[in-house]
Amino acid sequence: MGDLSRNFSRSEFACRCCGKADIDPRLVDALQELRDLANAPIRVTSGYRCPEHNRVVGGAKQSRHLRGHAADIVIKSLSVTGMYELAEQVAAFRNGGIGVYPEQGFVHVDIREVRTRWGHLDGQYVSFEEAMKTNGGERNATA
Image (cartoon, rainbow, N blue to C red; front, side, top):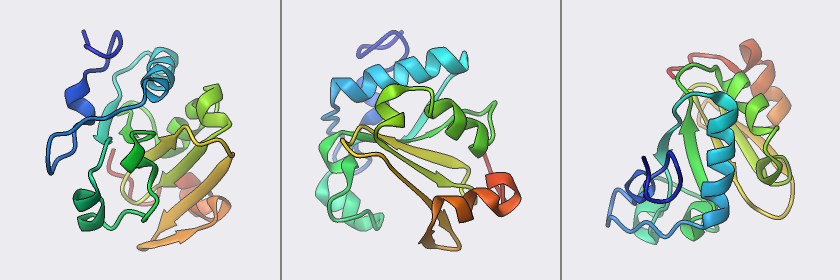
């Protein structure tokens, strides 16, 4: 049982640097909806990031993680493609941001106001289509 929703706790979103967990409730609601669709646990590998932690991990200067609007997630029972397809079923993510990271085996989801898709391969940001065509979005995935 979580303290933010049925399945999510504030501690899952806490910055690894300072422990702050300033998370937008809309993100939690969307992740709970995704968890219910998956009928499986979701591991948040990165939630809120303070500016220092975001800098250390090489996050974008205007990263949605800085606002508590984003999470990098893994659903162990699903491939990166499967996680993406499920995230597309949640309105907040379908209308927001989804990034696929096939080599690292995770998906980024956020509640931005503009639909945005991207991929990440070989340490570089690439088109979503390029990332997904690489073995169906599963190149060296370690979920």
